[in-house]
View (tube, rainbow, N blue to C red):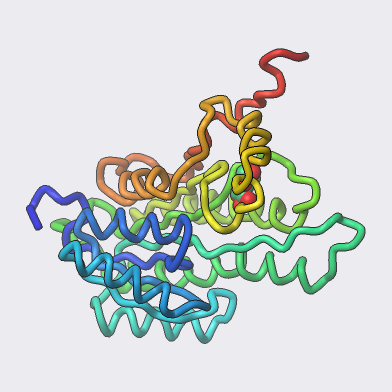
Length: 269
Ligand code: BGC
């Protein structure tokens, strides 16, 4: 691998990296020279496939199972990562899920599951990463920052989403988790930012794109008129993790083909 790689020698943990956006991000970070932990909770074979894809590109990766909402599993995962790669430079808090239902039918279990994974999981992983950044100290030859955290949020941190109240609430929470961490940790040179994806073609939103009718209806919400791909998000994650974005902290970068531009107003209002 050449020395111009943007993340050379850095170690990254991507949660929920065995499919969808997490997989796209893991591959993109590895292509820029990062050692990558592929976290997963189900489908170990899919995680191993991502590891193999990275190894075939000449990169380093390992798969580690952990439920990000469980404190002991998260701490164990970080210990395993440190035993293997020594430390962590980049955390991508990506693991997340949807459990959709009309509000009046939403069970407490589905509310809590979504909040536990999407929000508490980001807190638990970020806390372990921050502890290690501070313990280890700055390594100027690797990065100008002590560490970088990227939270996978959503356009639904700002766009309300009926029928998905638990999910939208979790992403609204991620926004304030990210900003408050960024404010507190900036003096220690830890950068914390979010990516706010719009509709990206992954298993989480399959019903929104897997028939021509569904896709056409989805495209009415996307001024740029295409669905996003995991590679789009991967490119942005590389930039946010690299020193190219060294002066950015506390920001959500929406990558959504204009979904947050209120397209319904282009011919109305
Ligand atoms: C959701 C997807 C949805 C997209 C745009 C994402 O956060 O997980 O299901 O397609 O937002 O609405």
